[in-house]
Length: 140
Image: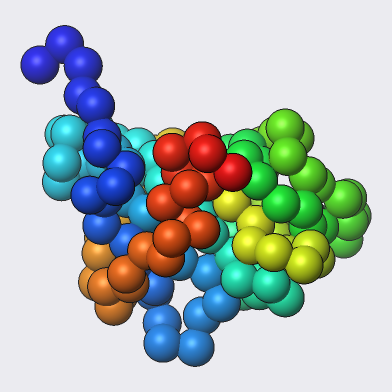
């Protein structure tokens, strides 16, 4: 296949752990596309954040599609908002936190995958809400 197109209105979303305040809309990964990267839309509820984490050999990229927050990496905190991009190198401990009144949406890419897609897919399925669909379709 020369290229793949994902209809985001039918995309599958997952929360890794029941208490997590962020969830992931799967776009492209090894299971669906045979690639060694993962592309997701990560959605953070108001006040939500990732747990502190790092990746041994993977780069992680975030591009803010909607909302605002704070990115913390290796002891440095920076505000992020729509249009900002962030690249994290392997071994960098980081946290992304939603500080806005609404949800924070990021395009998140990890290369290589390092089992991230499998971790996400092993979580619980999440139904996308109307505001999620609006942002994913570029309507909000």
